[in-house]
Length: 105
Image (tube, rainbow, N blue to C red; front, side, top):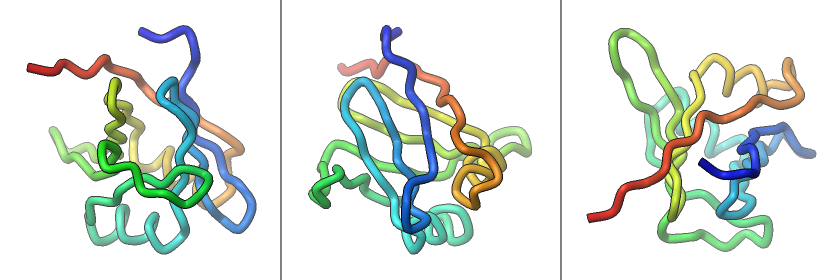
């Protein structure tokens, strides 16, 4: 595990900021809608707007629960979809992400 805690927070303009040990990323409201309601896989963007080819956000369904998975070069991060939605809509200021080291073959 990393010494830095991974967090998701709401930023200006209804964007969601994702702070990870691998860097900071963000999702726009349109990308959030596509992720949560349509199940689209969304590439994460750096604060400069550059898409990082190794990062991705997607929904995972298991045992009746839905989680948002954020995949970075070194980690896989997850959060329950309702907590993600609470941050995205401004009901919560921030929420921690559960962090798993990424195993590479």
